[in-house]
Image (cartoon, rainbow over all chains, first blue to last red; front, side):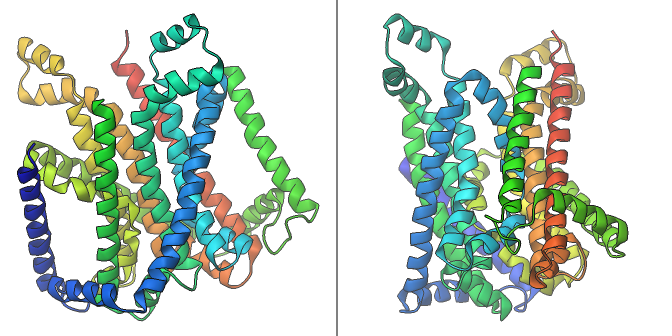
Length: 246
Length: 251
């Protein structure tokens, strides 16, 4: 697909979203939705206001820590359980049930353990992200073609050399998929943490707007976060596609 | 297989025992967490003696059932349409990939304005949160139907309905089941989160109330209940998935 066709797709998407939004606005009224034009202007206001950036920075820092923990922890857990057959069989179902539980229900526990502040947000973000990363890593290692492993044995590669030169390159595309999904989940977790357990950050701005029922602010912040997530995801997806093509 | 099960029981049991010991020894204080054994006792007490338990539980369950039904059927039907129009699919791709990175349930207050405080808002919230997972899974599921099966259907002169039911549906079922499990998980998040934030009834509201009143006994009892329910639901869906798989791929 050419770059031009893709660009046209995005234009059409933006137009379609705008149209649907307008229609919904006409239908639901200003108490339930803000009109798209005003919302975009509010997004612009945010991006140029001085009060916005400290909150964005607070979210960014918490998200960065949470990502680091989720990605490193998930990879370590995944390699540990994926390298050994029995460990994988034992661990994978446990991890996937942990992945499926609604972690939002655990927010009171996180609050009681970590208190208000950055550690609660980081913990909540990492808790969301670590399981998908680990599960994708295990899956990637499990699906490594047995021929590759046999080759490694024939070449008498040491375990560490096998991991580095055979397992990692073979599993990398799927691991990158896991990292992308972990990235999204971590962002969700960090924001939920901020909604319930914080006094600064974008999630905190959101919950304040919610409590005061400022429809325009809620919509503008959601749009902003969605835009950020979409751009980050598209970039990661581009990396992923390049990996898969190799 | 039995060995694997034994190891799993040992790992989970060990983790719970360690938690119990940490709580009993006072390393984790009672204001933070009560020992797991007390959580179970508290749960028994809540179920047995609290008058609000059954009405609130059935309120949440009804909303959950409606949200899951909506997100799964809606997601499946929209998925069919999206798959049939490749252009639409390419256009919507950015939305599908980033939908679950943002807590969409912050739009709940807007739903309340529209639907009022009550089951309708919670059901719509849960369905909105679950539906995208089902759409994406349906699209992938149809993608993964092997071409050869469609040729077999043509060779056997199956009509469109029988092709769909006998060939396409079984071939697509693994990914559809994945979508179903995700939609269930996300619908639960939506409904419970909505109840946390603003609701007049429901288990999620009871958790929030207990938390605000420092009533750790009730809070942990309800958390254990929710987690056990979701894990059991997930395991049941997993078992159903395997049973379907065995039935359709008998060799």
